[in-house]
Length: 250
Image (tube, rainbow, N blue to C red; front, side, top):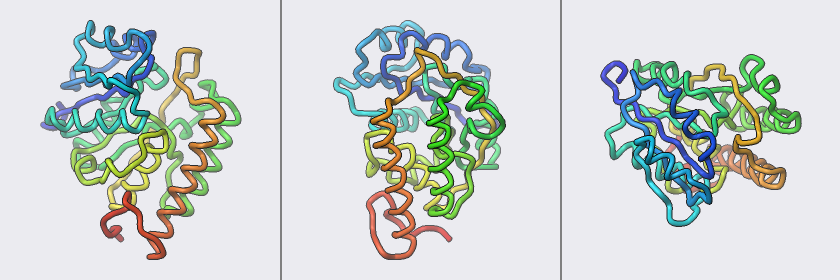
């Protein structure tokens, strides 16, 4: 716990058997109360490794996609009474050592959501991010900052923390079950007026680390642009969307 707030870490997992234990061993359990892993019908021993480690494990009988996995992660964490939920990929790409800092920024009331940014500092390229992904990240982030009327260093990190109020206040079930879920969720956080903080996060790219291929990256990028445009049109009163159901906070 931090400041009397229950901290739950969620691990959206798919074929993470080789890296799960490394990730789990670095979680700061002096502050983390529970860990939940949702296995999205992996083809390896991810669920078995999680259960051996004593992790609360939910298994999807069929693959629901990255967004569908997160929906189960957050619902399970809330059912466990979480006040702060940190999403950490179990592929060891992001360091678990930042969980305490990210959780504290929410537990002490400074922010409603916190992102571990690969772009702040020199973490991304130094950690091995492919140049084309870095350039795409910078382009998409620039467009999003313009259309969403916000300013973040990146919208595409997979290392995130949210307050209970955020997770219960957003219409997450209306979002995609695919990778663009991440982006839709951040657009919703901004739409509903929650405060977002960022901290610099080193990252590692290696063979076992999960990464979407070029084709899926293109689909994701188009989804990101579509979400940002949809946000702007809804803000202007020129469109409606299920993911932006309530009036935006000014």
